[in-house]
Length: 305
Image (cartoon, rainbow, N blue to C red; front, side, top):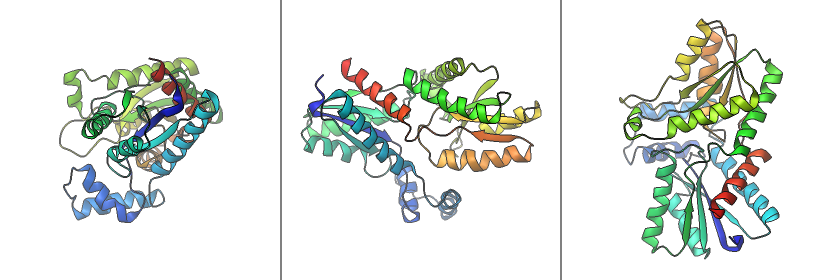
């Protein structure tokens, strides 16, 4: 397909950019219900521990610009990459409006979450569909629900993992992680856990790992049961089994965010230290050229199909 009028919409969860935005952001992710003062202060404290705010939105904007330059340089056409969020600014609806106003004739909607789930990627794409329906659908859209086994994505993860293992030692246990979701998704055959294991299997094979396992992290505080095992349980289990070096590889995230910088780098690392375990995390893909190539490959495949 000719890319001369193609818009790429990269979608993320969203994140506040300052302390003043924490309360309205937290209220937004709770569908308009204001959290308690204690909950707001707890979230502010977590952001304070990682430097004041999450770098997610800044990184995502830079990823968009890198992808745009890569597509225009190699494909020889004029692509424009936009960013939309599920719970913050700019919203997915606002981004779709920008794309329509720019008179693009085709759009590729692509969540920056590699693994397909009704609660994440499919939900993002439903928001795009709703925005298009409200606008009268003046643009054709292609939806990406999954890119969990994209070869260049796997290679990017494997490359970062190999660099970390070379520095730490290949005797370390590799612990793959991804964001937990409510366990009720399993009743409808949600593909999320299966795609996660596919990614882990491929990275493990590429990196020739002999000692690895998988767990979830960052489960919500709702009363319902979430997918497990949780990273805290897994670290305790590995420590009890004699592991002294753990390398965490976050296959479910492509950018630094609160769940990585606090939940792993602070909370999980403090737990590991108390248990006599050295916990190291592989670098997030962030602005890696390997991630840019993977995203470009996903876009190209979407436009060909």
